[in-house]
Image (tube, helix red, strand yellow):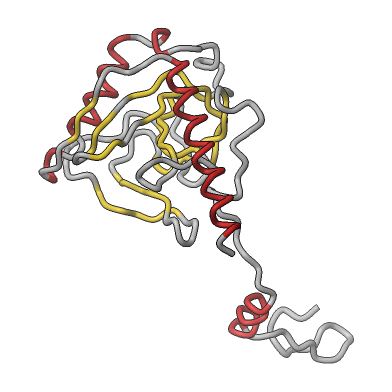
Length: 215
């Protein structure tokens, strides 16, 4: 077989391989669409208690990655201005929608950092009410449902109090050097988190119906 474009294979005639730009144009003509993690990934059959979470930022990272809603790719939004790192893996719950027109945020406690763009099964433990620059920006606090160290946790009260203090303090401080005000309230129990997730699922469903009516 030929190892380069236009050179003969062993015992045969020259084999024409499309040039790179022709390959790109050919793939575009097929109108292939890449999967979008917000819309194409199912939330999971056990939601709102256990659900898929797309990780945008790995535990220990100072890089603020986030979903580019147009392309579905993970982009670098900024490097955190404060001398802090994300205490746990952080991302969003697919097929949910909040009042700020973003998917519902989720912090997933587990033993290891994971790569941005992958997804994990998460179990909701609580809801952290938060106001970011005057706008509601609540976070789900969860554990990885497939991590043997954490999967048996069922409610926020199961976590050590210091762990909760660390989480709250991170979100209170991570935007201070940007002169942005963030207010974090006490973390609420698991049933409140289930309600928030279900509400965001319902909002997403309404958004889909409205979109279909307008097409």
